[in-house]
Structure formats: C-alpha cells, structure tokens
Image (cartoon, rainbow, N blue to C red):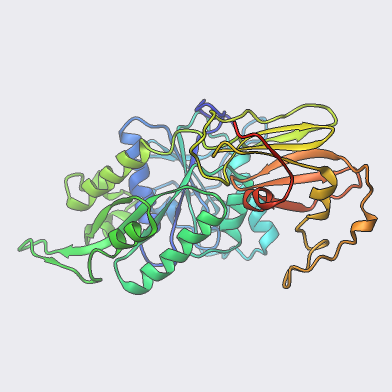
Length: 389
C-alpha cells in the first residue's frame, strides 16, 4: 500500500466505533472525513461494516465495481476529495453479504492492504457496532493510531459505549475521545433546544473513564436528507450547528494521535536471518508500564524495554511454556495443557511479529507459532530483572 510518510510508512489509522447501532456513527465518519479533506488532509475511508455498508451512499460514491491496477490493486472510489472502499462497491445493491468470520477477516485485510490508496495522511475505519470479530481482526492486523467512540446521550447507549471503550483499551488502541451524537434537537422555527435523549452523558462518561470529550453534535433533520443525497452536511449546510460541530471534531482529531506509540509496527522480525527488526520508540521513563518501546534478542532470550523505563529478559523456553494458545492452555479454565517436559531445553525463537498495538506473535524452533502474547502478559512474566534505563 502506497501511503504518506508519517514516520512509520503508514497513514494514521483511526477507528470510528460504537457499542450499539443507530447512534449515527457512519454519519459522523462521513462528515469528519469531508471536514478533514477540506482542511487539506489526504483522507481515506474503509467501510468496515461488511454486513451493513452505508458510507458509499452517504458520500455519493458512484455505483459500479471498482477498477484494478495492472499490479492487481483495487482502485478506490473518490468523492468530496476522499478515497473510499466498501463491500457495497463489490456486491449488488440488494444482495446481502453472507460471510463467515474468516472471509470477513480476508475482506477487511484486502480493504487496507490491497487497495491503491496512494499517499494518505489519515485512514478512517468505520466499524460496525459491537465488540466482536471485526473489531478484534482490525486491532490485531493493523497498528491503529486510535479510536473514536460515538454514543447518544441516553443511558443504554452510554453503558454499551463504555464496553466498547474497554475493549479498545484491552487491545492497546488509544482512545482519542468520545463524541456525543444527537445531542439535543434545535427547532428550525424558534431555535429552542429539546434534549430528546437527555444531555451531558457523553461528556460524563469521557470524564469518568479519563478520555477526551470531542464534542456534541446536535440532531439536525437535514442530516437525513444530506445522507440520502450523498452530500454530507458539512457540504450541504456548512454553517449549521451540526456541521460546525463536525468541523471542530475533525480539527481536534486531525491534530492528535500523530506521535508514535511504542515500537514501530507492523513488523516481522526473522531472527534466523536478522531481518525486519522493529525500530524502537523514543526513550521514555514515564510512559505506561505495558507499552513496549524496544525489542532486542540474543542467545539468552528476548529483551523487552518498556515505556516506564523497565527492562526485562525472558528465556525462550519460559516463553514457549507460557504460550497462551488453545493448544497449550484451556480456553475456559486457563489450565496448562502443554507438558513442560516436552519442551526442549535448547529451544530457540525463530520469528517475532507484531499483533496490532497490543501483542507479539512468537515462533519457536519446535515449529510452534500460534501463541499471541499480550504486552500485559509479557510484562507480568517472571524473568531476569535488568537495570531500568
């Protein structure tokens, strides 16, 4: 994928998520994408809601199958200065996408890796609601720069939004903030505001969870017409309160989250060949304890440098015995299934690769390579304690 040079060879990938459906997440995505493009950023949008794609309609993307480059890359559609890819562009209008999990994962990875995006500054991922397979696939496969959580002010939406926030935190995706959508209805005749879904809930949950509150977007009847017409509100009614709110959110998000977090990802480090070692992050002594900033390896094992300045060394055999995969651990009870006596004393690591922003995959000389080691689990392992740096 050809991308803008943001220090890591990838654009900033920002997920727009919601705990439940019907909160206007795709409308928020379409409008902040257009606002970012108007501000001069090069923006792409992946409609990751494979089963219910709506972004092409909201952006007015022309019907028809996408073209292919001579190199076999998909050419994204363009509208309002934004590049777009969606399942809606690959299927007929009324044909459902009947896909099992592995095929969904394949399509999502194709939408990012096999699309000729050109140079991008930001790639927005419009996620389906919930905390399921699609969200986990994206968090594992790509180094997400952050996530925005969209909610309405009503209590049930906020409770489910909290779960979405916690899910992103567990996979080490930084939460860029909360957007409170449908925050009051402004009467077009008299200007009075009616808080249909209560008020202030989004700001309260952001404060409670210690994340940024990005803003409130008022309910505007013109949003419906603009979405149906393929003309986002920031274009059709640029001076409306909702459009101004979208622009403020886009401006805030466009300027945050750009700094690198931890080691440079994605990477695949072939230890036997010495190729692909990830670049370290800037040295730090006051970051989170489960943020990995550098990796080293020698005959004694894996050396881990953490953002709080701690350095840890873990032996290959200890890592192999600690493998958390379903072959080595019972998925329900967590009980060990692997017999430590079957692990050779001279076992070696052969390959290390990144899993999103939150874990490492490890391959060993006995052929085992299915374990995903989260940063938190690695930090909690008892290894050789080295001097802090």
